[in-house]
Length: 170
Image (cartoon, rainbow, N blue to C red):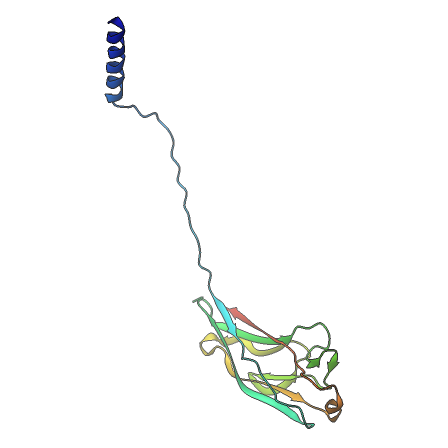
């Protein structure tokens, strides 16, 4: 009987202890800010593939009126420039068929209405041009085919143009 009273007393003491309000111990708190950023977008869209057709006579082959567009979501940008280059390490600016190159380099035009050989990077549009009229619709290429080119290996002659846009604020 004493055991039962002792067990009953312990249960009652436990229930009473659980019913008592708990006292919180003093502590410290801290905060952390979580953040992220959406970057501004800057894009250049070069013209689609440009074909000059079949080189069957010695003459100039041209493709003009090609569009290049640029855009940005950055509201601080007011100026834009456009450059073009051939990034291969050797025979820069020349259409190639494997190791065979044409006699004359490809010429490009944009902004100014004159052609320039693509033997180095060419500026088509200067950075001081307002972005409101960004891009251009008068990009063109010209390949002069010499009579000696017509006796070279048959096949496709090509190069890859790399366009770069520079965006700036005043």
